[in-house]
Amino acid sequence: MTLERATRSGRGAGPGPAFEAGGVERVRPYQEVLVPGIFGPWAERLVAALAPEPGARALDVGTGPGTVARVLAAAVGPGGAVVGTDPSPAMLTLAREDPAPVQSASVQYVECGAAPLHVSDEAFDVVTAQQVLQFVPDRRAALAEMRRAARPGARIAVVTWLPLARNPLFRALRDAVAAVLGPEQAELFEEPWSLAGEEVAALVEEVGFTEVERHEWTVPVTLPGGPDALCCLFGFSAVAPYVAAHREALHRAVREGLAGHTDGRGLHGDTAASVVMARA
Image (spheres, rainbow, N blue to C red):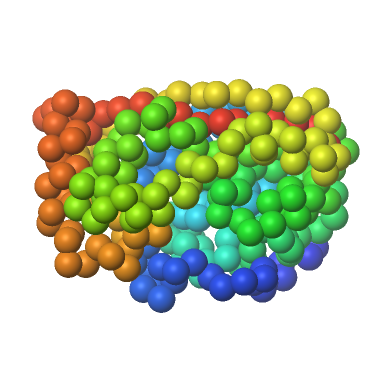
């Protein structure tokens, strides 16, 4: 089964992610730490809620290391098809390193931004975007592209983190940045948590989706590597240019801040996000 224009490759408008210059090794902590510890549990929860039919076609926008795409592939089975898009060749390389499980749909990875999406019109029964919309310059355009790609009756889900007050593990990173680098850098670090679910829901409805629902989910996560594993996030945040000379001080501040969340099995805590679901 092919997905016509989904085979095209190209970038959307604007530069690629800042970490792209470091290549695959620069983003490998996503695969080694964030996929099993955080992205995986969220992908399982999201796909279970969508419950795609066997044989369905699914699109994962901003697939990163392919976590949601692989879970979708297992859910739709060998009769289905999955496309994951991302503007980062390094992330897509990571995604291709970890193939979908056996008895899964094939997964096709396409290098492109969220607007435009290089996929066919009305090609997909399920469309997901997990923790990417907050980084898209034109969010309405990105959601309009998702609407174009969705078949009539298709289900979509857009996930964005809730504020740091609801995410204690990530809040500890922000607090460490504030303590070591200062309040201005801490404000930069809050970027991924600045997009309200209400705004996403309004835009989803504006571009033509119906049956729009907004939920707030909390998913417990465990990082076996403890606070030091979580510190890999410093390399991917807006404060990355300021980190090099202060890395050990930042790690120490995170360890101190999360001492109460850490035991012999690793670092434990809740993560919380807004989940907007709708139909085409």
